[in-house]
Each structure stands twice: as C-alpha cells, then as structure tokens.
Length: 396
Image 1 (tube, rainbow, N blue to C red):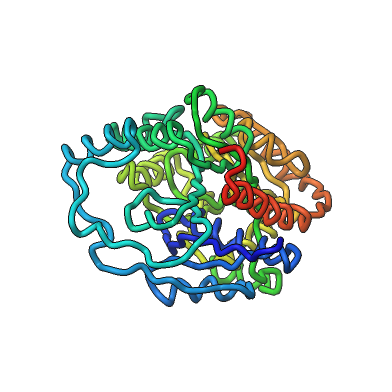
Image 2 (spheres, one colour):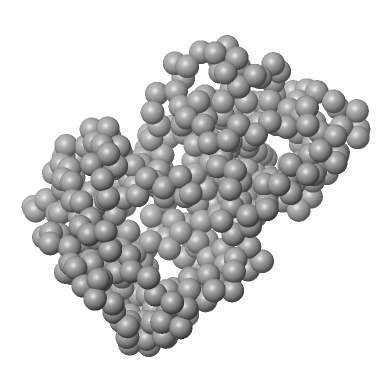
C-alpha cells in the first residue's frame, strides 16, 4: 500500500449489544496482524476518552482519537417525522426533515468511514462502508415491533437503492440481501470476522468454581438473554433429562438478562425453571468479565449455541478460537461458520438436544486442534482489500 489510508471507525462500548463492541475491537486486533505497510491509520470516533482507552489496549500502532462533538448529536423526531424521513430516504436518498441541532459536521479528513452511518454529522466523509449484520426481522418478525421492522427495512432499501458499499459477515447474509433486494445498486462484500481474546487461561479453574459456586461439570451457553437466542430449548432439554432420571445435569448461562424487544422474557424463563423444578440444574451468571467467560467456555463439557438466527456468531468464533466443542443449532450460517468440533441439532427439538447432552455427559466430546491464527489475519486482510475497493470506487 503506497498511501496509509485514514479510516474512521465508529465505536460504542454498548453492553446492550456487546457483540458490536467486540466486533470493532476484534477488527483492530486483526489489522494488527497484517503487514505494517498495509495497516491503515485508524481514527476512533467515540464519545469519551475512556471508550478510546479500550481501543488503545489493542496496541495498534496507528490510532487517533476523535470525540463526537455536541450533546445534541441525536435529535428527537416524533413518529410522523420519522415516517416522512424514511420515505424520503428510500426514494431520494436523504431525509426531508433535518432539525437544526443535527447540522454539526465531523471535522476530520478521512478516506473512509466504517461501520458507516447516514447521520448528517458524518456527511463530510466521501466514502462510507456500511455493515448489515443480518436480516433477522425478515425471518423472525415476532421478535420485533412493527415500527422497528419498518425502520430496518427502510434503511436496507435506502442502502440498496443507491451506489453504496455494504459488508456482510457471511455468505448466508449476502444471499439474503440479494433475495430481498434483487435490483440493488449497492456493491456488496463478505467479510467473515474472527476474534482475538484477552488472556484467560491463566485464571485458576478452582477460583472460578468458587467465584460462581460451581461444584460439578457443566454445559455453558454464553448468549445475551434475548428471545432469538433460544434459551428455552436448553431449558426444555434439561427438563427432559430430569424426567429421564438425569438429576445431575448443570447448564450455566452468561449474558445481560434484558431484552429490549421483550421486557418480560427473562421472567418467563425463570417461571419455566421454577414450574418444572430445574432450579438446581440452571445457573444464570449475568454479564460477567470477558476473561471469566472465556475460561468457563474452555472448561465446560461443551458450549451450547441454540440460536434461531445469526449473521455470524461470536460464540461460534469464540469456540473455534479456543478449540472447544459446541452443540449448535443447524442454521445455514452455523454450518458455513464451523465444520470441526461441532454437533448440530434442530433448534426446535428439545429432545434431540437432550440426547446429545446426555451422550456428552457420560463421554466428553473430543476436541480437535484448529489453526485459528490464520482466520484472524484473513479478517484484517479482507477489511483492507474491501477498503481499497471502496476508496478507489471499484465496482461503484
């Protein structure tokens, strides 16, 4: 690379969507693995110096901090105004109603912005690379409000109808995009992300067992407690195992116990646990330290990833990177993502999951070694390759 590109990365430390936080941190770690002459300068656009401090820990050599200016960055629009702006965004590529407090612009010379935002604050940046993680609302509309579905689809249509550049995390997701928007003008790319972990395997197992009051081997399901993550099938599988006489089964769950789309969801899970007398077999740990989570994943009998929908699962990448075994729902994207150390099951069949858990309780699955470092470097190389195409207007 002759010129070291200046790329802006929008970063939020958001516990409500921790996968998005990890995504940017993992991207920077991946870029740190590529040749120095390929490394772009990264301008981290965020709210506070503390958030930038999380990025500095990556040790990436070409970092700059750009603080978002103005407390009125995100103005309030009432429902009718939002509806009007969605229509105008979809058909002419810009909103009709722009409130005065949104007219600030980012004063920063950048070659590209990622993951791009259509907010007027970023309108001074020529090249935008957007990211659509998945199309869950098209397949599981019951987990979304009608307004959120309309908003997501309007945003997707807006990007599809203009000569934008969009990155997807899987071939499965990009196939969905072309299915729903067959006449899209946008350039589309696949960039399969990989993970880089903090040191976790130095944590003493006995200390973790004492900290979380664990006294026996366990399965581990490290997902945010959201409805589409499908915790209920695991609870039903445990209920089935107890009915068959397996009283010693234990499943640990970690993740924030709040679903913005279904505020009563966690209470419904707890009610199921009590009504089916499986309190001794289920332990919710809440949102725990990342290092603890990884070591628990590493020492579990197996990880369980029962999700009903994913764009590219961080849990599956975690499993691959530490060489753990996973019992995963048989989603097309999961089969694209992992081929070793995995047993697939129908996410709607609790009895099938129970059979697998029963088998692994008596005979721990064999974990095959994986050369994961190559995935991390490939992630960084893919990003730079896509950035070069976006900046040079190839395929535009």
